Figure (cartoon, rainbow, N blue to C red):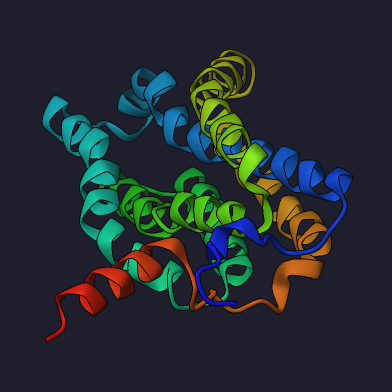
Length: 222
């Protein structure tokens, strides 16, 4: 209908299901940031076990950030053009594998590579869940439904540090990566089942950003 705000017509579904998806995104966001934080809590153990120099530890700490930052524009582009549920599930699966790989490395160079893979695979997650939430939540609940998972992301730093610290004290640094990565792989199946009603939806051509660009172009046309 002409003149209708495309975001005022969310995907028809129950309020219970909408909040279930928001809860799922919150759990995934916590894991997303936990997998980032885990390495910081066990750096002394990694240094001792792998014989890493301070320079190598500095590279290890920044490898994730550089890969994440450089790949983020591409991931946003993909999240606007591919089915967002698929982007979320692939991102979750790949970053969980990257986390497990970080636990099986034999030297610091391999660990740096695993952290680069983590950054490349994680950067697609947040753009996809924000865009998908904007599509299926009604306007009156859209902001809070986006903010809750983002708040959970901050909690992920605490969770990742606690898991890594506990595992480091009792089992060594590697099991921290195995446990978080394994949990992520389990969540791929759970998330796929929960998000199945949304899985067949391609990105809407009436996405707000695209709609805004269309209106601007229309006004600027001769």
